[in-house]
Image (cartoon, rainbow, N blue to C red; front, side):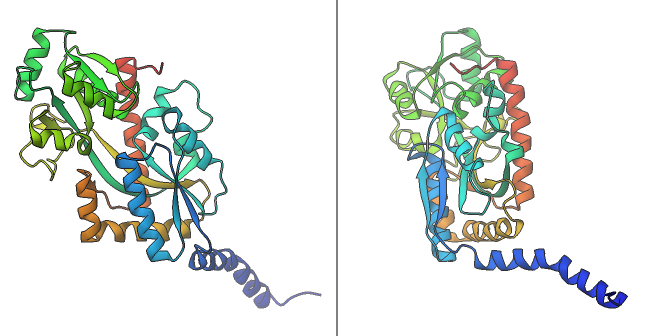
Length: 325
């Protein structure tokens, strides 16, 4: 039996529209159950707190629980791979951070390609690193520190949260940009590094602002600069490194991603809700407590940030010959 041409074309048009209609219905029904949000680091710190703030917001706005699962290990690679291997249905998400841009150049072999195997949903917050020194060091500004370091090559110990950690990479970036020779001392996390900085075992460290904010305000540590392009709201009198080192910008960022092939309608819905959270005054205040600045934008904006950061840190890691031990 032959169908009239008009009926055939109408049928074909309806068939073509079915996938779009199905995806729209899927997005409207999403989420129909609880959503797992993997944080690939231990509890505490900007990534974890940011993830919990966003998960709570999404739970309240979308009517299903978005629960946090901390899966630390291997510089965030364990939790990241778990999400990449999960079903691309919107029910397993990842709180990604700067390590996602650092690790491709830091690790010789990875079982995944972060840019290829994930889809960006939304950037959340940018958190400055704080350059701080023990008050016994005879410097009170970045220019004084650079001059002192050049007069004492290799004699200043720079602590970080571990080999290849964001703090370590930022410190190496500082060394490259200033031509200074600092001796890197890795720790198992920022907290023990700050403890030794307080005790004078090391002289300088780069950490998340919130990690050392109390010590700065008490005078136990001396802040020299923040690493972001703009000054931090929590420490408005502390200059940026860019005020002394042209074009210097380095920060930790946090965002939400999903496995590749997650329906675009779900990505778009989550992006809208995350951006609504970032526009909320109370949420902004919570992120400010971390020393962070909210980072609204589209999935494409976040994807560009990830690509740009991956390229930037690859150059630093190669130039500084950073290796994971």
